Amino acid sequence: MGSIGNIISKQRKLKALTQEELAELSNVNLRTIQRIENNENEPRGKTLSLICDVLNLDLEELLIQDRSIKSQKYGIVIINYLFLVVVNLAMMGAFGYLTLGSEGSLSSKFGGVLLSIFLPFFIVCLTKTMSGIERMIKFGSGFVIYIILVFYKPGFSIGFISGLFICLPIALGILFYGNKILNQK
Image (cartoon, rainbow, N blue to C red; front, side):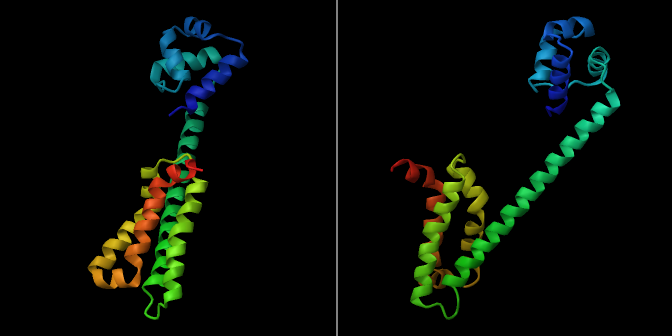
């Protein structure tokens, strides 16, 4: 929603019309014009046709352009979610390799603890505008799934001895409370 409203607003301004003049010329309520241009409503049918006639816009071209913009938005959303899945899998793999490896030494477990501090802190620094919950859902969901899987397959004792159950809650805590940590400087 919104691309049609932006196009109508832009075209109205190019024609040097006020919203009141557009409403009067198109026989559309002023409040409707305001809602369309503020992207609160999306015009359909007769309303859209009346506005397009006044602004000399091709109705079919406008609808095709709007569909194109919407499909691009869906593509971007899909790419973003795929990226988040890959990031979560990579982080799960790194923590698992450092802590659950069959030959995991004390130094690799220490590396896992350091990673559980610095990697989420780096994510927090890059996503300062996100809330803690949003950051945990996007970047910490893999950790939660990993904890559940370790409980199910190797068991609690292996997860605790390996250090995984120490690393993942640290990472989740930093992801959630990261904004508060950054603001206490």
